[in-house]
Image 1 (cartoon, rainbow, N blue to C red):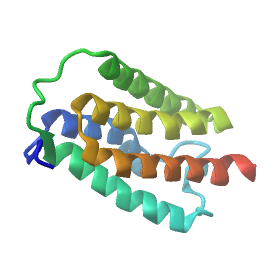
Image 2: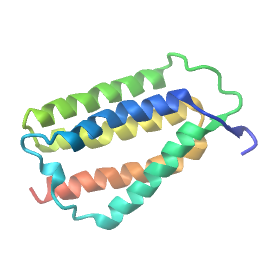
Image 3: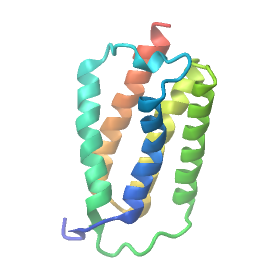
Image 4: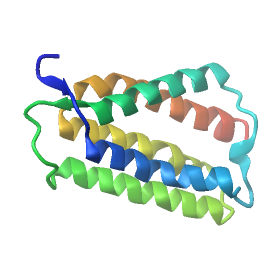
Length: 150
């Protein structure tokens, strides 16, 4: 922990906001074939995911590696941007009425990938464990609730 400090990562906050915009829109304006509002069959997993999400967002936004300079275009940041594009594509397909497993994967895997790649790029090892646990839980939620019992 010696190489970390409590700080404020504008880029961490911006990534969080970019990822959350479609979810906020979804809360306010339900999609036409809105299967995501169904009761979850994975309540314990969802709770673990929520706790880990809070932890990794806090870590990405408030814990900064001391020697980490300004954000630069790197292959990892390019991957973050690719994940965001895929995630938004998933939401467009979802609002277009598609709810097949591919769309569900676009709504679950890319945001996890974006956060993971960003943490790796920033050298934020503190955020990695909760991101990985959240990712496993988030994918499990999508698979069990929308793919296995379809």
